[in-house]
Image (tube, rainbow, N blue to C red; front, side):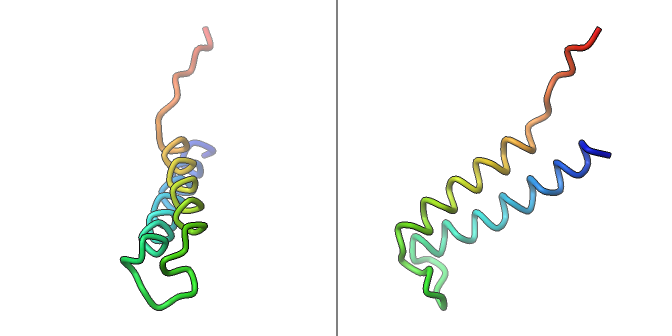
Length: 62
């Protein structure tokens, strides 16, 4: 259950972070976030956090 929840949260973080990154670049308009370097950085960090949750982890228990 926890693994499933982590993947869903990771996918949402990647999608939202991707949108924020595009708004920071100025590709997606219509917001105060458009063209803002701060939202570009926040978006990139959010995408990375989402990818960390999506990467499968090894279970090293015997």
